[in-house]
Length: 173
Image 1 (tube, rainbow, N blue to C red):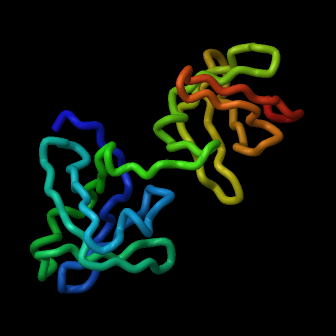
Image 2: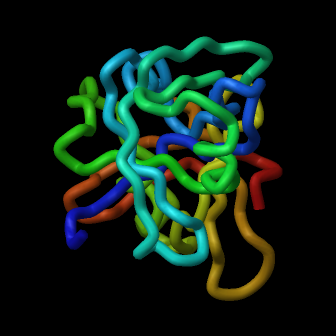
């Protein structure tokens, strides 16, 4: 499958004997991704050639996890082999975002520059610890730089050019 795929969750365990699974969501849109009728591709984490398409029959959220029932799965033995597999969607399933909103995959890999034009590094990861996201910038030398995604710090994001301009508040470096 040559089409670009995006993670939306991971099957972390089974739930009960009727074939339900516990899914750790890796999306900002779990209500859409896990809605009844949604198609999700399960991909083996170590062998991406092993794949299985599932259709969501029902889903509910509880304590940060999603409990999902897939169409056609009636017992635990049918779903058990899929523990640890990633749930993915295709690029055409992505939702159109508002202005100044971005998908993680659009931000990761962007070069980060200070207001003065100094190249600080590239975004290599995005953390979601709470109130706001934190962009982890890999620097050519030294420790990673942690940039909070807030208006006072992130001044401009240009997805087309893969460039981000930031204001370095005191204490960030």
